[in-house]
Image (cartoon, rainbow, N blue to C red; front, top):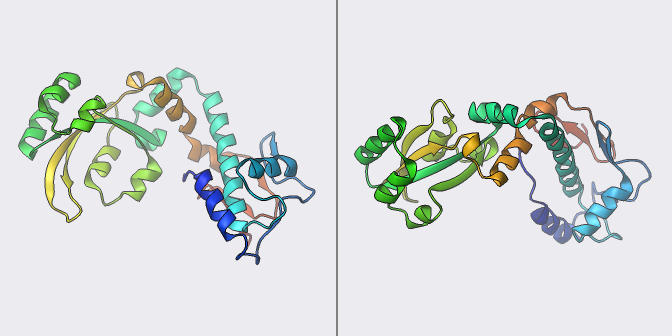
Length: 249
């Protein structure tokens, strides 16, 4: 499920207003814009939402920009329903099972010089070695060291978009039961310059902010397939497969 950058969307829509008039729509029509279950996006709500982003109320906006903003609202409603319906224990089980179950993984890393070193550290971690201690003694990346080894959280969409990056694909296979892997790192010319040891952060190791973000995205794709979603034909229709509002026809 792709996330829509609302500020980028606004910039695109405002600059395109003068040029794009065919296939455009105003946001002042009389009926509702969209609905997810019992949650309704009225025309007044949508107008206020667009005005808050800085869109001009008296001009046409590109239909593609409007559909993208409606998509954002729909995904927010579905994610909220998923998060509200999961207990912390359920969220932990789903997340710890890996990317296919949760849609998000959070990982730590240690950058080392070569494959032999990476293999040794990976074996040590798998055998119960202390990540913080190994990070302090073995890591070659100062910025990663300052972050406590935290590489961050990756979504399934981000991993799909980085399909040619070996360490991202190695990360995609991690879970609580398969918590450690390693991968070469390449520069822009395709030359190997280091290796990274990847360590999966289990749910109970996540920061509160990361735990909230993970819970909000759990099983959203599956929920989209079953969600009761309506979009006014003025704007298009909702495609549950892509998680996007698309044109009719």
